[in-house]
Length: 273
Image 1 (cartoon, rainbow, N blue to C red):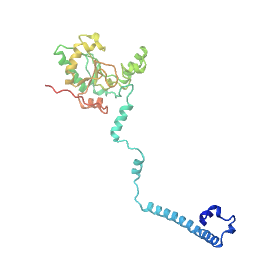
Image 2 (image 1 turned 135 degrees about the vertical axis):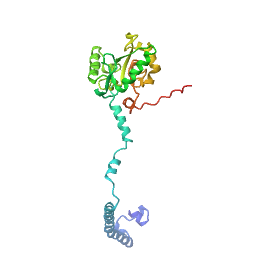
Image 3 (image 1 turned 180 degrees about the horizontal axis):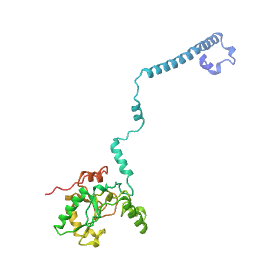
Image 4 (image 1 turned 180 degrees about the vertical axis):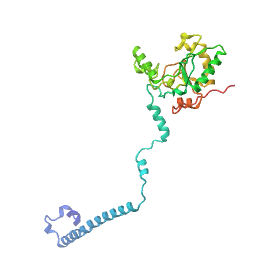
């Protein structure tokens, strides 16, 4: 507080020296300053005491308060990412893709059986049984379905992908539109088969196969035997259209092999009239 505020007089009416202040006012000021000096230790002591009291209270609360579970601490300190199983599936799905192709394991040799006359083309037993039934049903209607390729090992796929890709001067992305990278071919599973028309061998593994009687018959009847076309036009994987490439999805194992964690939605089809 300055002298003008203390005396209540205008600044220009104050004496020029503190000695000219009336005694009563000087005594009051001295008394107030002395009182402030006496109260200062008490104030400091009060603040210090308050701080000490707060520290002691905090210590006691921490000692006797409820304990947090370490497990809950660790879980709360990290962000929650939802259902762990579904996330694991999603991550696996994303991490296993190479150039649009999904990863597949090789079928066990003990589960492979021949589906061709020379016994070189093989499929898994469940798929082979249904394929032979499908071939017989087509033949009864004058259509000759011929297997061109079935199970293919990862080693065989390596040669198909890299060697032929080099011969054709194709980049991996260009090659992947026509052939899956090793470890990512449906043929590894033993459930996939390339089909030709025995009456039109020139259409084997080319787009003109879609004009054959064999392809038309497959479109109309393959689902009854558990088979579907893997890569139709504009498929979500971005793989070139392959009307000759079909896969078996007629039992639980084959269905899960191709559809588990792939986020494929059911297709709505009109009910038969």
